[in-house]
Image (cartoon, rainbow, N blue to C red; front, side, top):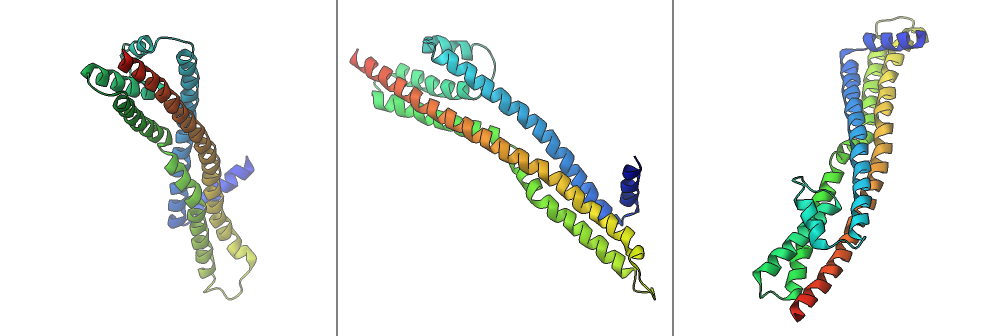
Length: 228
């Protein structure tokens, strides 16, 4: 408790510029933690939805019935559902137009799925750049506050005949708090960015693999329709 009071006292006695640096780092840290908790929920949910949809898709369910179940739920499809919905909707639309070759039907569905995959990846990567920025810049911002605080402490010795370490120690201690806060903001952001980037990459690979497998299924269906 005494240590906490001492740290708080050091913060309050710091110069206005150092206080501004600390405030900026505190805001960045709070924003990072909000993003971390939110992104963790989003990615966990995305993985669960991918597992659930793959189980339905590969269970032998009729594709038309599965598509109607998705579109009839009156909700925005996400993840693999979005890719499946985009590809199968375009496939059905081109099939209804008639006089379109199987190759054109499959290519149209693939284009729609690529667009859906890109949008889904962008949604998953949203706010990751902020974590990367906080992780890479916070130590330098904190270091700037520390350098400024130390420089101010030594400038105060200009009019002193006999300088001692006790005279500059409080100012240096105040300045070093800024470095500590910079690390406090940066370390969780870096860890979370690396972990979430890895999760997003794995999901993107799963989505891309599903797109290719579904394209093969649509290609077989298109050839069967052309032979009828």
